[in-house]
Image (cartoon, rainbow, N blue to C red; front, top):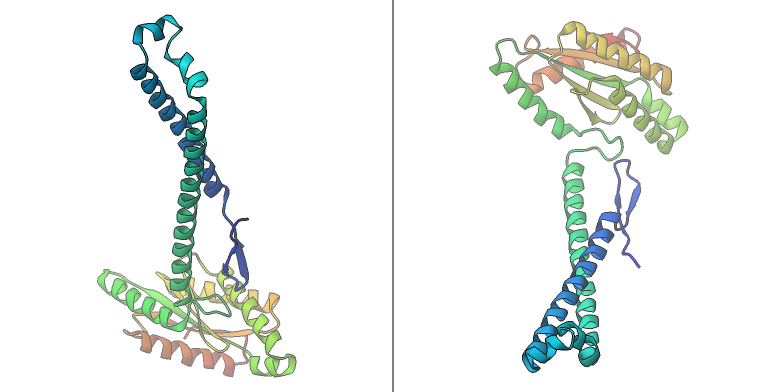
Length: 270
């Protein structure tokens, strides 16, 4: 029976992995190949034995060396083939398991590295990873002649009330839904992270003021239409609003609260 290996998938559920066809094919092909190789070696060995222990001329007159192999040496030849075939099967099995566990170890290492930078609930990047990317983007944009990007800070409106009314499990599902909507609303090059609680943050590389507003409005409208809550969004721009990650987050945070003060479910770009 194949050993079943389980691990958590990207959605947090258990993913069952079994040996794939590649592993099994490697096993059977390796075993069969070794068995054929053993048969050929056995044939050569016993043919050589026959040639060296009988009169060469008599052997050829009687019909060749092959005639003497099976009738005269069948008792020792068959166990040779069976034994080497079983050895081939064992080696094929060990080789197969070696490949399996190496692949699984690499997959577990990859997932472990991913868990260090991903928020477990929403599957967005976490806060520390976002600040790391912000630092890299500031350096990249500073080294360019005209480097710019935008930062979007999002906070769900009245989420504490929603959480208290419906319970934390329903609230967690709402956060997961919001996260999915945000990821589907941004560009492929944008970085989405959970900033903390019901706050999310988006790094829009290369975005100017117009494109940043477009992204923010798309997020706001999609959340309003598909989620049980709304969102207020504050924008900040590099380099106009700050030269460090902390300055940009502070400016985006202030504008996010401005959006809430103006009635919520709004985007504040200035």
